[in-house]
Image (cartoon, rainbow, N blue to C red):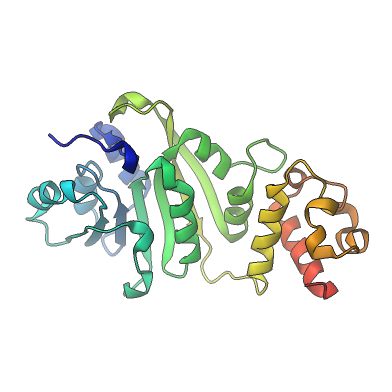
Length: 257
């Protein structure tokens, strides 16, 4: 028996009904190319292999590789790479892929950002995350959980919380509840001033208790009222995602960056 490694944030999904539900909600098609992050003991893998012609599993824990290879060796559509997903090279992919997996909670944000940065190769994600993170990802403006990822993912796509998952369906049981979320990236959508937009969002929420006239002062260079207008005396959680796009556009037009 292989025990979960705390350093890798491992909690193995044991409930087949939950696994089947996750796969079903991802709506896999035969022609889809799926990448499964951290297959673990193969809870999702077995159902994915029945639904799609191409599945690449990426597992960082070398202890699990022999078990996975032995369990799924008869499936011609099964491929396994024993690497860290954060090191995966998306440029090697022949087509746009779909991401699925029970993510390690300690690097969830890093994984989502990596997929976001490679969205020309990633169409969507169906992922299990900590429930608190799921609430942040799907938060609307005005709420306390609204933040950087809420804004960015809303501008570049769509986030939907699918269902909550109790600790009892894992081994070992995590100390927190989990949830499954769907993230879909809009195809061919780009902002010409993307880097500025991302910096603005991160700066605003990096000092979320401050008004934007203060938190974005590095961009407005003493002209906050002229550039920010009605946004100047608001805090970041009071702005809609499209408002951040407008602010970045105004900053760029002002020539202050």
